[in-house]
Length: 104
Image 1: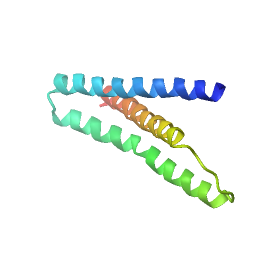
Image 2: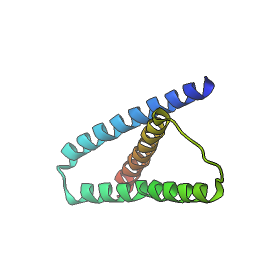
Image 3: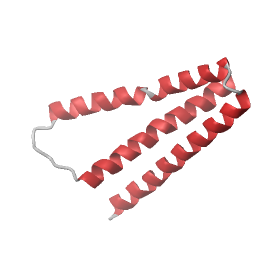
């Protein structure tokens, strides 16, 4: 039961971060009028966020090589993990946008 509560809290945070990212991007898009600086900020933030894709690939590869037993996972747990992953990706992009907006 505690594991479900933790997953629910993390999932709510992931959804909040995703909504916050899209709201922030819309506000910045209007403020900067889609100029070249804003495009550079978005490009660099997406490059930072794409690091998590490689982390996931390496993690799944290592898990595949070390796990000897057949383990099963429910579809609902898989969807929850996917949404949390999507939220983590958006969190890194949000942090990248905030960092590069201040530094550029």
